[in-house]
Image (cartoon, rainbow, N blue to C red; front, side, top):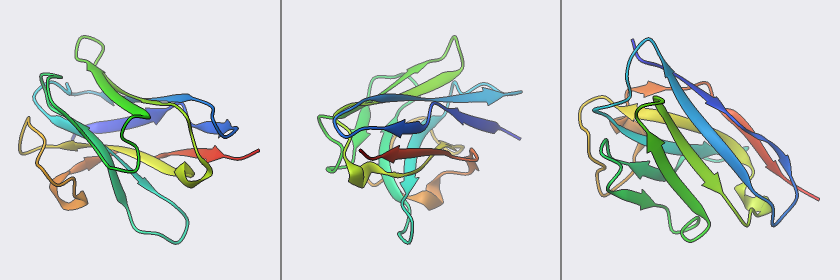
Length: 127
């Protein structure tokens, strides 16, 4: 089973930056679209971003467009989420997930389409 692990969360001041990493163990990420989701306390999961297996096509939620950048390095079996200009409302647990059925991103980023998930990493934006 594809196992994903997220790294890079932490506490950052508003306006700051963090880079999250999503690494796979035992299996390659090549061939799968990878998504980032987040869940804030008391709220539902929100799809943040997706990247296709070739790294050519990316999608973003409106709430993060222009601030977050998703990328991947298949040679390192890792997907990244660069988060800039962070806001307190970005505070959440961030998860990466693999779409085991396809290598491209669907127009809508929904939880049910992603079959393998990491354990999550906490991002807190606060002064």
